[in-house]
Image (tube, rainbow, N blue to C red; front, side, top):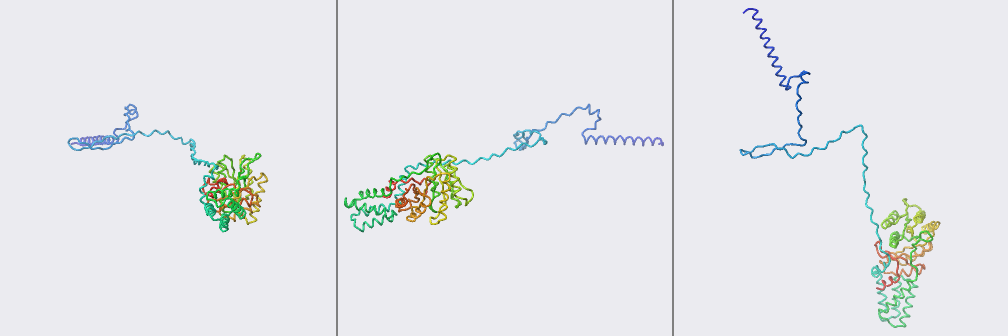
Length: 423
């Protein structure tokens, strides 16, 4: 073979190798991209591939087993699709944030006001309690007088029984002298006759003719003013709260004055009593404030609100402390700069007996007591304190406490009291 022929062979081999390489590259490109790169003209003329429909949202497949007859196989079946979430509008970050809704806090329910029962006839309703505590007096007297023989020794026993019941010497002497005269005229009585005599004599000593009304009505266009005084431990603040209930039951408009500024809990206690029946309380937030100033403000507030009555509670004080009694006189004088005081109620513990008598005398000298409130009368057999304190001061017992309940303060009824003593 000549040289020319060798050149043709080499050229032919090179040409075939180039063609084979070109074919290889084209095939490789088709395998990667799925198609060859199109020219701009070709892309413009090429048909658009149809858009693929995306699967439904929240649709998924679960696998379940079925019997195909030839064995157990598996198929895929869609579960029940759920609804797609609602489309959210695009957020405009440039817009100011929407104002947040204020949190609504529900106010606690207002407690219903209590409606106190009427005070009319309350003494009769509570007669059983009184008769239980004073039964010793009535039974002892009936036993002595209806025993048959009334000699000097028997009459001395009658006197001792009456004195032990705290009737006092004068009242005891009057009762015994009257009973002796009746026996001399009628002879030795039976029990029913003795009971009748005792009822008449005791009722005379209790004196049903005394005016026992509480000043609780507007006078000359102003509220009535009631000042409540007493020693420590007699239940004075509680009595003021209970008296407010008595007056509310009579449809009176009441204002309370918390002038006991030395005992931290006194104003809170009084305010609680008032809140239960819808009665306003005038008080100072500062412990140890001037009690006369608080009393003055209470009376002023009652006048401005056109109340029927203002009840002023004062601090308990020992009757033998002259500085404290002078302060009580100051409270009275300050109140009277804007309004007369229509009632001064002295609260006494019925169980203190003759010690309560001394208290009554000192308080009466300081503030002109107009009425007595006897607390704890159901807890003593010495009911004669009613007679003794009235005789000593010349003022009536107007209210009596017969228990711990909120409505156990009763207007004093002389006939019901005597009946209870002799039951």
